[in-house]
Image (tube, rainbow, N blue to C red; front, top):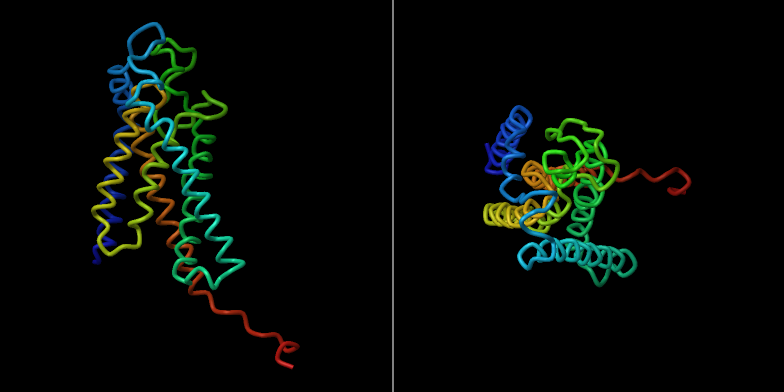
Length: 233
Protein backbone atom coordinates (compact mmCIF):
# COMPACT_ATOMS: atom_id res chain seq x y z
CA UNK A 1 0.00 0.00 0.00
CA UNK A 2 1.39 3.40 -0.97
CA UNK A 3 1.59 6.34 1.43
CA UNK A 4 -1.03 8.13 -0.68
CA UNK A 5 -3.46 5.21 -0.40
CA UNK A 6 -2.84 5.04 3.33
CA UNK A 7 -3.57 8.76 3.62
CA UNK A 8 -6.85 8.42 1.72
CA UNK A 9 -8.00 5.50 3.85
CA UNK A 10 -7.03 7.19 7.10
CA UNK A 11 -8.79 10.45 6.25
CA UNK A 12 -11.87 8.63 4.98
CA UNK A 13 -12.00 6.50 8.11
CA UNK A 14 -11.71 9.50 10.42
CA UNK A 15 -14.34 11.33 8.38
CA UNK A 16 -16.82 8.46 8.69
CA UNK A 17 -16.28 8.29 12.45
CA UNK A 18 -16.80 12.05 12.78
CA UNK A 19 -19.92 11.95 10.60
CA UNK A 20 -21.45 9.21 12.75
CA UNK A 21 -20.47 11.11 15.91
CA UNK A 22 -22.12 14.38 14.83
CA UNK A 23 -25.25 12.63 13.54
CA UNK A 24 -25.76 10.51 16.66
CA UNK A 25 -24.66 13.23 19.11
CA UNK A 26 -25.80 16.55 17.60
CA UNK A 27 -25.63 18.13 21.04
CA UNK A 28 -21.87 18.48 20.47
CA UNK A 29 -22.56 21.32 18.04
CA UNK A 30 -24.84 23.06 20.50
CA UNK A 31 -22.42 22.63 23.40
CA UNK A 32 -19.54 24.20 21.48
CA UNK A 33 -21.64 27.12 20.23
CA UNK A 34 -22.91 27.84 23.76
CA UNK A 35 -19.38 28.83 24.76
CA UNK A 36 -19.62 31.80 22.40
CA UNK A 37 -23.18 32.86 23.17
CA UNK A 38 -23.98 35.61 25.69
CA UNK A 39 -27.77 36.07 25.86
CA UNK A 40 -30.77 37.67 24.14
CA UNK A 41 -29.46 36.96 20.68
CA UNK A 42 -26.07 38.53 21.42
CA UNK A 43 -22.82 36.64 20.86
CA UNK A 44 -19.66 37.30 22.86
CA UNK A 45 -17.83 38.35 19.70
CA UNK A 46 -18.89 40.01 16.48
CA UNK A 47 -17.50 40.20 12.97
CA UNK A 48 -15.99 43.61 13.70
CA UNK A 49 -13.60 42.32 16.36
CA UNK A 50 -10.02 42.19 15.13
CA UNK A 51 -9.39 38.45 15.48
CA UNK A 52 -12.72 37.48 13.92
CA UNK A 53 -12.58 40.13 11.18
CA UNK A 54 -9.31 38.82 9.73
CA UNK A 55 -10.65 35.48 8.47
CA UNK A 56 -14.20 36.73 7.96
CA UNK A 57 -13.09 39.50 5.61
CA UNK A 58 -9.82 38.36 4.09
CA UNK A 59 -10.41 34.68 3.38
CA UNK A 60 -13.06 35.38 0.70
CA UNK A 61 -10.92 38.15 -0.81
CA UNK A 62 -7.86 35.92 -0.94
CA UNK A 63 -9.93 33.15 -2.49
CA UNK A 64 -11.25 35.48 -5.19
CA UNK A 65 -7.73 36.73 -5.86
CA UNK A 66 -6.36 33.22 -6.32
CA UNK A 67 -9.29 32.32 -8.57
CA UNK A 68 -8.70 35.41 -10.71
CA UNK A 69 -5.01 34.49 -11.05
CA UNK A 70 -5.88 30.93 -12.11
CA UNK A 71 -8.35 32.19 -14.72
CA UNK A 72 -5.77 34.66 -16.03
CA UNK A 73 -3.14 31.91 -16.35
CA UNK A 74 -5.68 29.65 -18.08
CA UNK A 75 -6.50 32.37 -20.61
CA UNK A 76 -2.84 33.11 -21.27
CA UNK A 77 -2.17 29.39 -21.68
CA UNK A 78 -5.05 29.14 -24.13
CA UNK A 79 -4.20 32.09 -26.34
CA UNK A 80 -0.44 32.36 -25.77
CA UNK A 81 0.69 28.81 -24.93
CA UNK A 82 4.31 29.80 -25.56
CA UNK A 83 4.20 31.90 -22.39
CA UNK A 84 2.94 29.14 -20.08
CA UNK A 85 4.76 25.78 -19.82
CA UNK A 86 2.62 22.66 -20.37
CA UNK A 87 3.12 21.52 -16.77
CA UNK A 88 1.80 24.85 -15.51
CA UNK A 89 -1.21 24.66 -17.82
CA UNK A 90 -2.00 21.19 -16.46
CA UNK A 91 -1.71 22.40 -12.88
CA UNK A 92 -3.95 25.41 -13.55
CA UNK A 93 -6.59 23.21 -15.17
CA UNK A 94 -6.46 20.82 -12.22
CA UNK A 95 -6.84 23.64 -9.69
CA UNK A 96 -9.71 25.27 -11.57
CA UNK A 97 -11.61 21.98 -11.70
CA UNK A 98 -10.96 21.42 -7.99
CA UNK A 99 -12.09 24.95 -7.13
CA UNK A 100 -15.27 24.39 -9.11
CA UNK A 101 -15.98 21.09 -7.38
CA UNK A 102 -15.09 22.57 -3.99
CA UNK A 103 -15.49 26.15 -2.74
CA UNK A 104 -17.16 27.58 -5.85
CA UNK A 105 -20.02 25.20 -6.65
CA UNK A 106 -19.67 22.12 -4.49
CA UNK A 107 -20.01 23.94 -1.17
CA UNK A 108 -22.97 25.95 -2.40
CA UNK A 109 -24.66 22.75 -3.59
CA UNK A 110 -24.17 21.17 -0.15
CA UNK A 111 -25.63 24.27 1.51
CA UNK A 112 -28.66 24.16 -0.78
CA UNK A 113 -29.27 20.46 -0.08
CA UNK A 114 -28.77 20.65 3.69
CA UNK A 115 -30.71 23.91 4.29
CA UNK A 116 -29.27 24.04 7.80
CA UNK A 117 -29.92 27.18 9.85
CA UNK A 118 -26.99 29.03 11.39
CA UNK A 119 -26.50 29.04 15.17
CA UNK A 120 -27.55 32.69 15.43
CA UNK A 121 -30.87 31.82 13.77
CA UNK A 122 -32.04 28.89 15.89
CA UNK A 123 -34.36 28.95 18.88
CA UNK A 124 -31.67 27.63 21.24
CA UNK A 125 -29.89 30.96 20.80
CA UNK A 126 -33.03 33.10 20.72
CA UNK A 127 -33.61 32.82 17.00
CA UNK A 128 -36.72 31.66 15.17
CA UNK A 129 -35.56 28.48 13.42
CA UNK A 130 -35.02 24.88 14.50
CA UNK A 131 -31.67 23.24 15.10
CA UNK A 132 -30.87 20.25 12.88
CA UNK A 133 -27.96 17.78 12.97
CA UNK A 134 -25.28 17.78 10.31
CA UNK A 135 -25.95 15.86 7.07
CA UNK A 136 -29.72 15.62 7.57
CA UNK A 137 -31.85 17.79 5.22
CA UNK A 138 -33.34 20.46 7.47
CA UNK A 139 -35.55 22.78 5.43
CA UNK A 140 -34.63 25.62 7.81
CA UNK A 141 -32.77 27.88 5.40
CA UNK A 142 -33.27 28.95 1.79
CA UNK A 143 -29.97 30.63 0.92
CA UNK A 144 -26.48 31.13 2.37
CA UNK A 145 -27.03 28.30 4.84
CA UNK A 146 -24.73 26.89 7.51
CA UNK A 147 -23.61 23.43 6.36
CA UNK A 148 -20.80 23.57 5.27
CA UNK A 149 -18.75 26.70 5.97
CA UNK A 150 -17.63 28.49 2.81
CA UNK A 151 -14.92 30.40 4.70
CA UNK A 152 -13.49 27.19 6.17
CA UNK A 153 -13.68 25.36 2.83
CA UNK A 154 -11.83 28.20 1.08
CA UNK A 155 -9.14 28.23 3.77
CA UNK A 156 -8.68 24.47 3.48
CA UNK A 157 -8.50 24.64 -0.31
CA UNK A 158 -5.91 27.43 -0.33
CA UNK A 159 -3.52 25.29 1.73
CA UNK A 160 -4.37 21.82 0.49
CA UNK A 161 -4.13 22.71 -3.21
CA UNK A 162 -0.46 23.86 -3.38
CA UNK A 163 0.75 20.66 -1.71
CA UNK A 164 -1.62 18.22 -3.36
CA UNK A 165 0.80 17.03 -6.05
CA UNK A 166 3.92 17.21 -3.90
CA UNK A 167 5.70 14.10 -2.71
CA UNK A 168 5.67 15.29 0.91
CA UNK A 169 2.11 16.34 1.60
CA UNK A 170 1.97 15.99 5.37
CA UNK A 171 3.11 19.60 6.14
CA UNK A 172 0.42 20.96 3.81
CA UNK A 173 -2.25 18.72 5.31
CA UNK A 174 -1.35 19.81 8.83
CA UNK A 175 -1.19 23.48 7.81
CA UNK A 176 -4.63 23.17 6.21
CA UNK A 177 -6.07 21.64 9.38
CA UNK A 178 -4.60 24.38 11.61
CA UNK A 179 -5.62 27.24 9.31
CA UNK A 180 -9.13 25.85 8.83
CA UNK A 181 -9.46 25.50 12.60
CA UNK A 182 -8.49 29.15 13.05
CA UNK A 183 -10.94 30.35 10.43
CA UNK A 184 -13.60 28.05 11.83
CA UNK A 185 -13.07 29.39 15.34
CA UNK A 186 -13.72 32.91 14.09
CA UNK A 187 -16.93 31.74 12.42
CA UNK A 188 -18.05 29.84 15.51
CA UNK A 189 -17.39 32.85 17.71
CA UNK A 190 -19.89 35.07 15.88
CA UNK A 191 -22.62 32.44 15.65
CA UNK A 192 -22.20 31.92 11.91
CA UNK A 193 -21.41 28.19 12.00
CA UNK A 194 -21.47 25.04 14.07
CA UNK A 195 -18.38 22.94 14.69
CA UNK A 196 -19.52 20.28 12.21
CA UNK A 197 -19.92 22.96 9.50
CA UNK A 198 -16.21 23.68 9.84
CA UNK A 199 -14.99 20.09 10.14
CA UNK A 200 -16.76 18.92 7.01
CA UNK A 201 -15.85 22.06 5.07
CA UNK A 202 -12.27 20.79 5.27
CA UNK A 203 -13.45 17.44 3.99
CA UNK A 204 -15.38 19.11 1.16
CA UNK A 205 -12.21 20.75 -0.15
CA UNK A 206 -10.18 17.58 0.31
CA UNK A 207 -12.79 15.56 -1.59
CA UNK A 208 -12.90 18.17 -4.38
CA UNK A 209 -9.15 17.91 -4.90
CA UNK A 210 -9.31 14.12 -4.90
CA UNK A 211 -12.17 14.06 -7.43
CA UNK A 212 -10.40 16.62 -9.59
CA UNK A 213 -7.25 14.50 -9.59
CA UNK A 214 -9.19 11.40 -10.65
CA UNK A 215 -11.00 13.32 -13.40
CA UNK A 216 -7.83 14.88 -14.81
CA UNK A 217 -6.06 11.53 -14.69
CA UNK A 218 -8.86 9.85 -16.65
CA UNK A 219 -8.90 12.62 -19.24
CA UNK A 220 -5.13 12.43 -19.69
CA UNK A 221 -5.41 8.69 -20.40
CA UNK A 222 -8.12 9.13 -23.04
CA UNK A 223 -6.71 8.15 -26.46
CA UNK A 224 -6.56 10.83 -29.12
CA UNK A 225 -9.36 10.75 -31.68
CA UNK A 226 -8.49 8.90 -34.89
CA UNK A 227 -8.42 11.02 -38.02
CA UNK A 228 -11.42 10.72 -40.33
CA UNK A 229 -10.99 9.30 -43.82
CA UNK A 230 -11.47 12.78 -45.24
CA UNK A 231 -8.65 14.07 -43.10
CA UNK A 232 -6.38 11.27 -44.23
CA UNK A 233 -7.06 12.07 -47.87
